[in-house]
Image 1: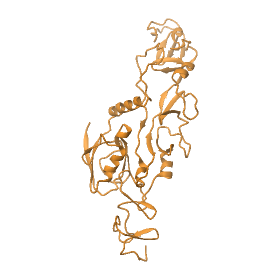
Image 2 (image 1 turned 90 degrees about the horizontal axis):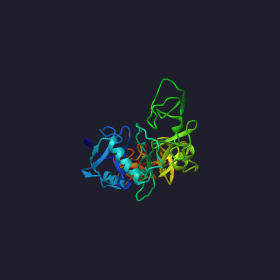
Image 3 (image 1 turned 120 degrees about the vertical axis):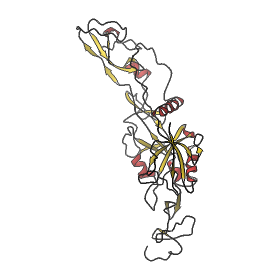
Image 4 (image 1 turned 90 degrees about the vertical axis):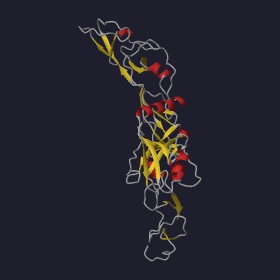
Length: 348
């Protein structure tokens, strides 16, 4: 995969966020770029893999180590990036999901039918952590987690369609013999009515609803018993779309923002004190903005705590002459910082 180097002219703020790291078993990637920032004016794109920071390989870096490496850049920041690759992502996701028990490789109960057109495995969630609020105060610990989830379609209830005998003679999907007489059509194939049965209990599904799972068909009762996961919120079985998040399974309508109670769907969400929040409510309730420019204090940005507010280091300047006050004695008037020379300025 093609790699390229992006150099951002310092000092910060750089205007991007990271997600992933060795401690999360996920590669470091660019999760967000602030519009109008230095990052936005470069070749950097959301989703790019971060291969190296100032020439240091990131393979063994935890999320916090990567953040600290970026913060230590005093002048320019050099990032070696690699464009997003779907195949690489899917392999990483599969390894991650198997290791956490979300994706299973043990076979199900008895399989009776084999489909020649098996569908690819559903794409599970991308579970990551960008430790966003670790940068808000020195020594502060947090459980903030940023995640992106994708609902997994499974357990969809279907029903076979009956067709009368005709000159058409399709092949049965079970016995592969020619059907001479009435037949069923389900999952894009034709079946002898007497051979379209539940793979486990053998109940006829000719006039019953069924669920397809791992290339076999099951009655609703057997599917619920052997395959349907339980929702972490309402504790009932999930038939249909399954949401995988926080190492649990949910109905898509049950996994909601702790503030506005709206379902996340496949949108980004954040964790704070064990509760999930949508992007909008998380920013409104927990994010820190620079008091000087009103832009967020992003991952990797250098910041200053002063006058009861958080400032980008480049935004903490004298309100009169705009000289930078980082590390310098300063005064304040009307909640604005002033250098020694303009400490008694009248018009501020």
